[in-house]
Image (cartoon, rainbow over all chains, first blue to last red; front, top):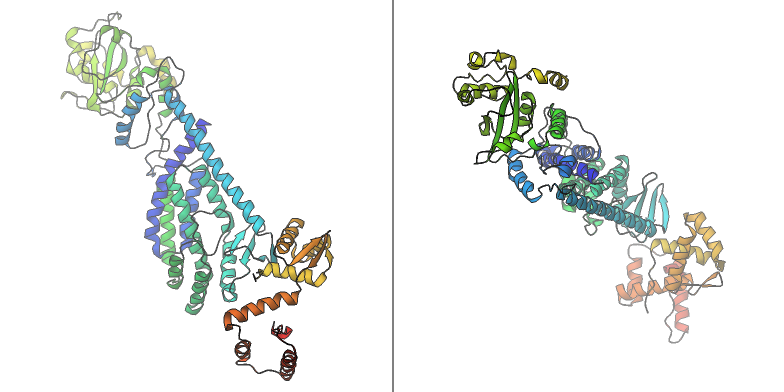
Length: 473
Length: 132
């Protein structure tokens, strides 16, 4: 259940960006017909409801997976909000407060996540229960009805006209309603049915019940209801002249009931802000063709930019594998940079270890405890950190366990350092290396090492060849 | 005297009872099902409410009225005249007949009523059916 909740949380956050975009777009589309707005909310609904989504290079969303279930459960918790500044601000704090305790099998943050998911389930259940109770109440009070015409019924206990029912929807009118208002009201409710609004609103509420924790979703639902009413009004008055529209507005005023902010089933006539609807009705002008086209183009743009996920790192699968192989190289804080320790076990065998940057020198025991990773493994590991290249320090050292002796002065040679950096896909820091990060044909150390160091063009030294090929298949 | 208010739906149902009374409640549910497509529970609910309002009574499964249809609407008419014309019947008649001429039949009926009222001592006459 916790994993499901995290997935839903991620989707909610990603969809939040789309909702913001739609809210802005509604301002731009003031002159466009209101059914375009409803279409946009449909897009939001798809984004929130469907368990899959498309990736595109045009996505403007920062991140589609802010919380990673595996990370929260087993590793130093970190969020991937897609906004580096936010990551840098939040993650060290998270890492400290919720530092994993090796004695426990799961992180303390995971326990909190479990509690959160239980709360989420409870909230969703409350909302669904509320909807069910309201539905039963309404059904009961509308049981006493007399037929009027077709699927229209009259009721004593009904305060304002509305629609009830999914499959065979019925229109309920108050029995005491003014005869003059009957015609426009019936036209309005019939338009609702033609647009299938009696499906969209409950569907919207269902999605809201799942995403109840996201205030943007509430805003979206309220605006959806408003746009549905306006679009319905427009459908009715499309063919009307000014006089008929005045008559329609009068009926609107007649039937405006007390404002209920959120309702599930009944599509009431006077529910949404009456003032706005009357304004819309009286000022309605048939929109020009090009306006509709422009609006639809903007919708498409919103879909591409905000309804798709950002392209995932192609190396992410390998990074996951490395995460399992060298977990200690992934839990590091980068606020003081990273230190890459490199030693040679033989002529072409370079090994790499990673430690958090600190002000002090690392002890020999710490260095000996490092697991030796291959160059391209370390390169990938480094790429997973959100740290600038200048904060990555390469520190060559002579490993006493190695049979290969690296001369002391070479260890401190900047060209040797550059050669190593290039192996790791980093820019050289000294002037002599021309900063080739693509191919690693290092200048300098060739004659010193005696071997063709060119063979180390970001490819694994001989010992790791087989493993390397397997990785980069 | 507290007036009994009926909504349009209740009024239709009450008319049905007045028309068919005395009628068993079971028969009533069948009628309501046929006319309005009401479930048994709905019919009983409305019936119960109308009995509570003092219009009908359900004794041993048989429904009879405590107030006749005429009496019921008479009370409403009286209340209307009281509220709108301060109880003045001539004022009401003047307003009712303004803009439309009375037929000979109507004039004869009214004359007869006035004569009858004059004969009675003290009681205010009930409004005739035609004014309901």
